[in-house]
Image (tube, rainbow, N blue to C red; front, side):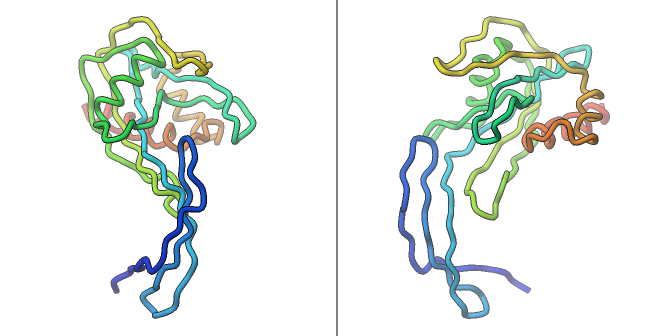
Length: 179
């Protein structure tokens, strides 16, 4: 069976700093129509940066929508027409001060495809070289090094809840186990 929906109408109901919101009417494959709300986001990257002794560089920061401090992999929003790899290199340097001599593409994920058009590109960064952080003006975070096996335990205990971090760490662990 083939699944599809065809856009019949679209209206931008909000234009924001990071996201826009559209309200659409879609024709379903059964002939009925349905309203859809879609958050348009430019996409982003997440970087699982692993040291030679299997520690992952994690950032801890307050996340306003969740009203709590969240531990997550370094990440950032794509600029208009920006290459995801270039964004990953930039964000790793900005948020941690590190650069990497080796990157592995871990694929892309859709964080919440039921309402949001966002694609996150995940990268594994290896052979790390320390440097100096250069955060954006209102970016407040701390960098921690956490053993990758400890992160997997935190994921399984539902202590690490950030989706990109969960997927990225598990994919990185599988990749490193295959070496």
